[in-house]
Length: 257
Image (cartoon, rainbow, N blue to C red; front, top):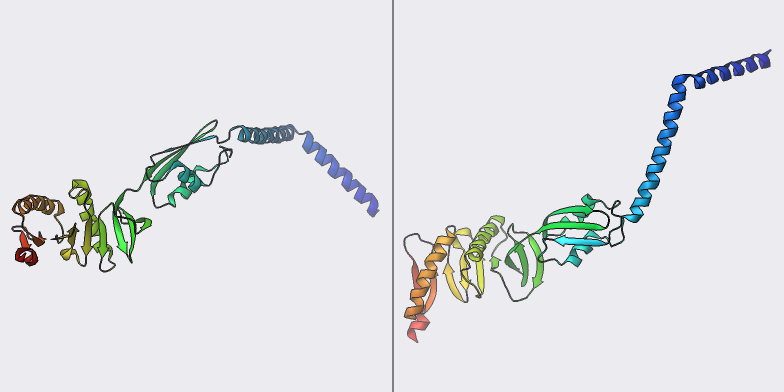
């Protein structure tokens, strides 16, 4: 009896399953699943085929000044022949932004074979002198690169103590010097112990600048320097820290000679 009941139950289940499969709704579901499967499979095959055809053969770098095109490509860690579809623009941007020289970057794919990298580099403002080495600084005070003991080509900042606010003030002065082109072809040092005691050393001449109004102070210096040169006065230092007067300290050694 037990075997007979089991056989009857199995037959009943088969009939129910067949009834479900033959139902109109079930047939539409089966057709939909099969069609979707064909579409997905076809799409995957098409994607793989296109990925092989659309490969990177040309990389265009725009906006670079300090970094060479080869250095930019090396930072992205890609080579020609990579699939244009498989390369992630976000990942490439992340790799490039790891460089302190690169402030902003946009990557655009131009099928079938071109990758365009448009970037904005940090602009060097000054050199930081630290433990006998020189470091290129951006306008934001970020170290871009160490250059060792190379001859300076920008104002050199020397801080008597590590202080972010003091560095920021020295960078402001360096920005004014560069923008106004006050000391072209001259060796310029900015020595800062405290903001109110910032001094400039221009080709050996000591100029006490203090804090703030840098453009106004340097214009005043240019006027005074012309008079000093015409008179041939040997100068120990010039003090520009006061708004209503300029102090010129004559060199005793020069006067005695």
